[in-house]
Image (cartoon, rainbow, N blue to C red; front, side, top):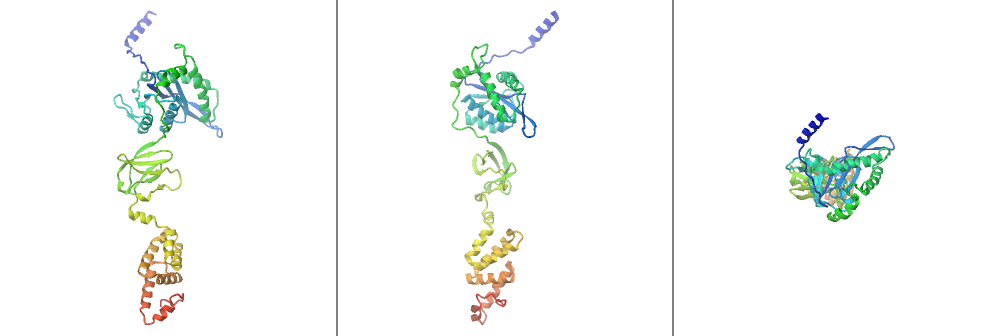
Length: 395
């Protein structure tokens, strides 16, 4: 026994001093994930998937919030903070997280680097983020104790229950939270809820009018087709920004693109359908004209000349395996028709369809033959045959 006492005294002398922390009302909330998880069963397959447990403890009252999420990734991490603030009906001055990658991009004693999306959420609520020092659990003893208490009171009570969805698990966790927050603390003689309502809640800042909408930020380089990629889909920016670096902000509904702090493009986020979302205003003028080429547009151009020209365009597009292969032919023919009057164009179109001359070379030859025929010595014959469809019309 004497030897043990001597060794214990020696051990006590090596212990570093600890500082008692006083937590002001409304000052800090400590957040972390429980090391233990809650199993959830897929009702159809019987597969068991484990969910994470997010725990938050207010500094002055020890009022506790907890919920289950599938992962510790950024969307779940930020979503838990949004629901936590709503649960508290207010916002403290500081959030003290552990150095989880979703919240802290680079842990450091002097200059911790906060994840940009996490920082935007904090800015929305007007709250500061002060990560605990790496490998210093005493910096966040409140949440460490809260996590242990949550594990024993939540997981311990729910260990014999089977959950088939995240919603079921969170409903049971909410009931366990009520028991935790209503439990009278032996040393203080009051419950966490009483302390929260009388001391902490009045000191919290007001919630903003709207909940924060999760947004993911990415750096992107504009490619030579003036698009940036996000989750296998492509979104256009003004073509003048080709090869420039831009900031991309993605929410569940929109994609916003910023260059040097100025928003230069906004798109509806795509989850299916065409992979490219292109704003015509972002295109060079030459690309914009090409993008406007459609079968219907060529038909409208041809109709403005006459029904025979419309028939020619339809025949050209139908003769190609893909209509797009006939666009340039139609464009060339329409340009040839600029230099002749409408009646001649209609006559040439009718003859081209009749003989199957569905290319620019044939149309140019028919126009030349028609021009030569008009200057022949038999103008009356040309006029008489102007609307005929006979095989000798252009001969």
